[in-house]
Length: 415
Image (cartoon, rainbow, N blue to C red; front, side):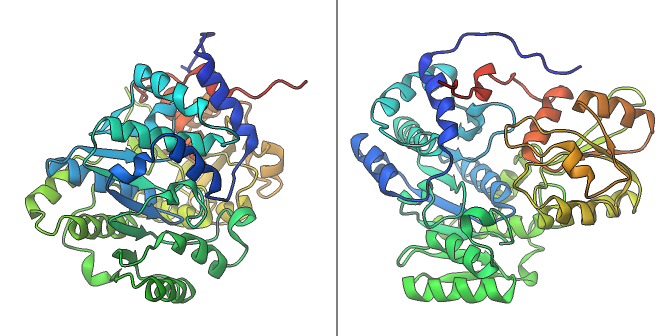
């Protein structure tokens, strides 16, 4: 049954925060530096593993946090976006920030915020909470890019650059070299960095930046992939696992192999090739946030491995600023049928616009309607194209522990 939004009143501070989404992204560190200075520069009291990239950075972050927690450290995890609730962005030893802590800490951050954006305030809030909770390590995922991303206010103990591809071109540049340069901006002087072997253009940019920063660069290669079993589904997770393990070893040189293995086993990262088994004879559902061609390629490979080509019913929705044709060119090979739905976001692509790229697809007014018809086909169901869609599906399938706050979709009223 579809998740119902309850008309609930939330504190004005939360309403103020979510209205700031209309300010969009800001690519400058000036405002976040001013904001953190007013808050006592909480970033200076914390130790970080900083993670940037196009695909896999959230998975790497989740694995790093699980390993460090298993090793006995009080571990914070900061990621974005959230799937169901805003609170998911802030975790301490695997637990989301509480309602009480969120509201209490948000008030002074907003008082100091000035013209700060939604993401800048969120980042400052995370720093304040982790400092208050005396986090011994913080695993710190970038939002967009790296060089001018608000998270780049920190000086980490290790930097990780995951696989880089073409995404967010409107912000980061329209060439692989430009995008890689922005991601490489998190590399700091004399701080070790880790990256997988990848496209020659990307490697050239990363090596040049690392040399300039005198940052020791560890390159993960095929020979490094088989030491540990990936805790998440997908061939690409072998690379992410190796990156996470190396990052943790860089900051904790005497880290025991048994702690790494147990930490990986305890890793949970919803919405990424997540399998959902359902009651009775209802088909299994795979959820994946694949939101660019590289992510679609990884998903298509996993579908083919499990069920073969043209084997699943694909329910697809995407944001308007994504490479929808590129994703569909890949995913259509996996699908016997394609159902289109609108993502629950103001940035969503219209189903009619998506259908112009794949005329054989059917359009539905909602995810519950699409899933009901997909179930009748008795094939495996794959829901993909956006993390927003994966989050909605988690709620629909009863996999989300808490409901989304109604004010998470607040937009400022027009004057």
